[in-house]
Image (cartoon, rainbow, N blue to C red; front, side, top):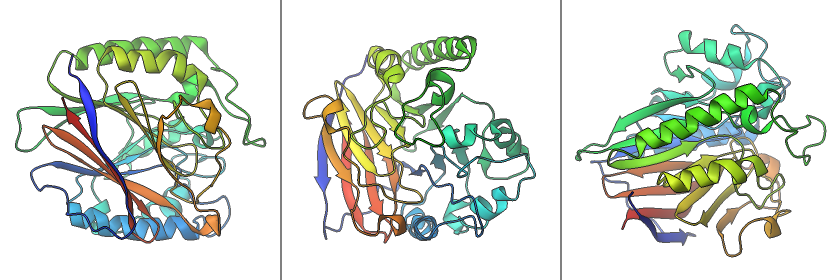
Length: 325
């Protein structure tokens, strides 16, 4: 099993960092970006984030985007022909650099609606890829003989839905224990398979394992997913759900919360619910938060994974690097 260490975690103010290496796998990460229920079905922050994402995507030569759930607020979509696909997604993320594939997972707000319609939309959009509630992908890393292996999971099927009217209430537990157990078995088998070859393994979901913000840690994931990821040498977990940007580290795994796609929530309500000293970065401005947002870009080489956080103006506010030991 490969060991990994963090070699850099830097909060940035006006520091200009060089663009990621050209000989790398470069992509964007965005969670909780799903606009709003009423016309114009977008938010000021979402549109601002989409604009600067397009700029960063051009800078790094982004090859694809990870969409971390809560794709359509507040109650998902009704069917595959729902106008929200156009008005909240297609007509917002219009930059040429964002026309490559979007790899999608569902969040709790998507599960309030029709997640199967989001899966079906894969056949209607050239850039929307969501083949099943959970799935895996492997990406060749340029200039190396290894790959990035990614497991996309449905954390709502694992941990349950939240209350749509009481935001702070924790997930109720899985609606179907059979569906949850089937996915847990698939997760274990997939991570075991990934661990047999060199390269990087990361996991993408909606609910956080660790978070200091409003929703806090997800106990089902702390108890079951975290030990599996540690056992099989996972390097990083990317998620949304809490509406800010966070980086936490626990054991050998880096936890990145990227849930600021349509607004920022400054909450630190669960600061005491995470392992001591695990929080390395938190971004959540306290003033005018509904007009602010953020996203991440990631660059992967054979030797390191660099995660960069940006605010809604396009200013880089943090960088973290994972390097093979």
